[in-house]
Length: 216
Image 1 (cartoon, helix red, strand yellow):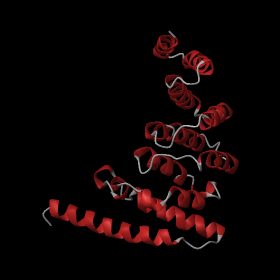
Image 2 (cartoon, helix red, strand yellow):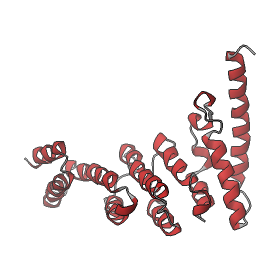
Image 3 (cartoon, helix red, strand yellow):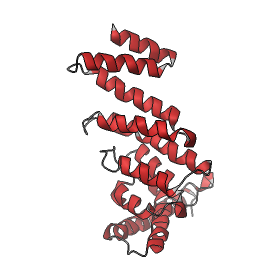
Image 4 (cartoon, rainbow, N blue to C red):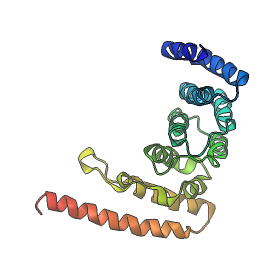
């Protein structure tokens, strides 16, 4: 009965009511699996609605509750989905010019121990959101190292000149990393140089592929 009610309110878009019903069902019978999973998805949905600079306090309440659910690291769908509202909060704060170093710290401290799905499109989207901050956040180099140079996807190495994108995600990330290191006066990690070599190789391969297709 509770499951049907949750589904009903989800379809109505009343996620708070659906959440309360699922939470009550889980508290009444902790052995049930569906309420916990449903709660996690509802929290992600509500985080998406709160992923605005002006809604950050509510967002962090939801994110903290999500982290406290004890979701298994093997549940890659959930860990793959939670990065999107986090990305949205960073992007909106940046776009509204409300981003502060304190906000960046708060987000990073909340997610750095989460077993986020990687590599993945969402994980790359999270990286792009932070890289655009450039000089606004002193811990950008630390974030990029945590994100991991080994987690770039094949698409992250590509440029899209037909769309006016002449710099790949990898190129922009490595450039932002070097710039961020200069600000804190640190040396690049060994992983950075490996990533630099791979990027150079991939760039050459793409250039050759474009010349071949163009008949040059």
